[in-house]
Image 1 (cartoon, rainbow, N blue to C red):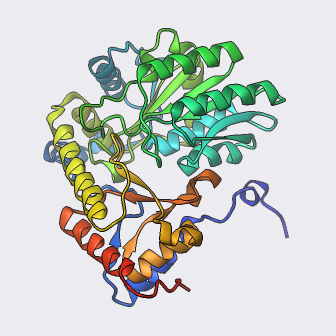
Image 2 (image 1 turned 135 degrees about the vertical axis):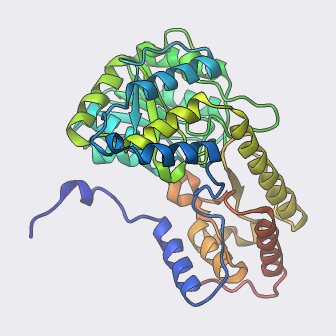
Image 3 (image 1 turned 45 degrees about the vertical axis):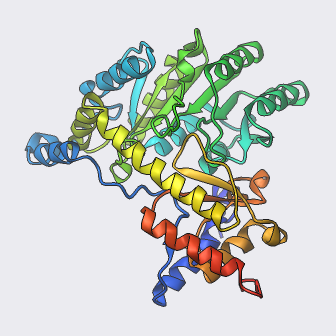
Length: 398
């Protein structure tokens, strides 16, 4: 039997345990409230849908497109960055459209990392931040994200003094999935200073740039003077523009890294369906009000979930960003661990969440809620938990 070395380096997908159980329960007719996967359920704004339908009818859009994104889309990306962050970008050399941010990150790492290279990655974190490095044949050094972003950077600075060979890259993401941690521009200034001092590259995943609450505004790392010398940033239209299934993202910043991604993509794909690129251009050039309306829906869901669970006896913080809530396992269930507790919540309360261990070893002790059900369903989930918690026997899930 031939072996597949890259696949052998990938562990079993932790989330599959809960996903399989959820599927079996639904197959048996159970009504499951799914707060596990971050799969947006808010419809794409009408003017974007109208444009893709119009563009789809034109035969010229049925041909192969541009791998790096059509010129008007890349220009729209750069103009969007200028309006939102005051950052100037060259659409020809500092911006590349991707088939979602996940594809962009994966192929960026494949283009820039290889055997013998090391990347610094937080733990917990979104799994592709870690496994894109593994798939590329490089190695990961996890930096615990336990006591906020300042502690993370201090731990990274200490790690640089002991690691050999020296790390080549740092992959970060704020607002952070899953912990919902947010940062200010001063933090990014420290990151860029750290990167230049240690001669490493920085990849910042800004997937949740739009989903921010209570007056908080997520900064771009590219707002830091000189950031483009060492850093790129990723953005996804899945969240703010509710275009998850459309698979539209982009990478901007350092032209060497953008160039490397552009080149490897030219071998691997012909880009998105051109009608989708045209619709994405209309979205980026269009009114930002549609994003603000989406953010308000998530804010109401956040408040409903956090306030409701607090009344049921399970308290956790309201996030200032992302479409998630990061919650410590209630004391009476803590010894179960995040996988068993997630299974318990699913079987007893009919509520699906993501176990924290799935985001890395330092995610143990937590679960992640995704705000992907309406407020009525969220209140139903809270009632399910309350009934479970008040049950005389907590009986573990099998």
